[in-house]
Image 1 (cartoon, rainbow, N blue to C red):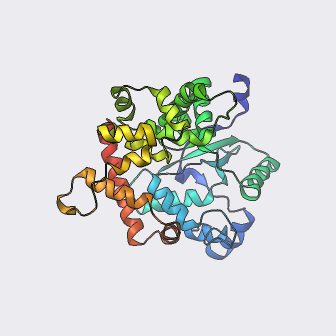
Image 2: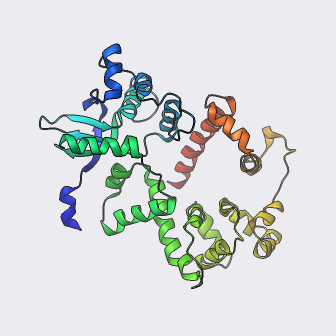
Image 3: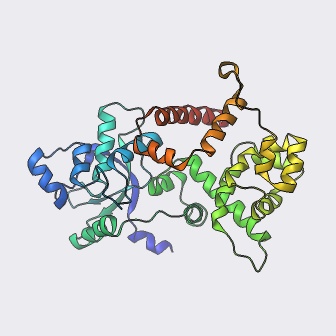
Length: 338
């Protein structure tokens, strides 16, 4: 296993201004000849056909990609570059993402945009470069399901013994998210797999319940209430916890004796009804709990058609309000955990 590392590319962060965009890419070259050798992020997106998807195209538009990068504070999948004999870093896959980082840095968008997660190959032959381009642009990457992603992260951390910074450079993402995925994977393997009957299938789709389990206060409340994580796994398997995101409501459920009783008999969905405090509250004087519950109920019951409309226009008031709230919630929760 360790011998193969010699042949693996290097996973690191590169200075965005030391990266050379691949203007020899046939789709970009025609555009460069017309607009010059330093195209903007939006011009690159148009050249690559990412401006607005054709019918049936599953990839993101340039605008949703840019907003996603801004919202998440960076990219999830590292770009791919080739370090040539001159020591230059040439983009193989990720031109648009590099251009977006440069745009954000130049416009002083909040965040660290001066370096970008990168997979660095050394002196690749042209046929290898073309093979990577074909895989990235013609075959297309498939999103891993969350359980498989967590299994791989656990392998990197606990089998290959990579540091957290190496894993982040390799896979992207944020440290807390990666730690939660690894912990959720280990909890699921240790407790959920044990309670699955021999004639039943292990269901990786239930992984999200174990991700929710990692949130602050939930495990403690389960144990304080006289249960353990094997009990939790049984609740997940028996669908007492359904939908799976109702895991986050367990502390409130267990703090209410009647709700706790209903949960153990009929499940979280019925128990939550007993926690309802109604929406007819004065919002200015409402507690955090009341506001959080109202927003949770609205989001969990958001019609699919309305969600699709919001996704088409990331600049509308509802979406902007959600993104603004997301940033504040992330910052507050991060400070609470420190």
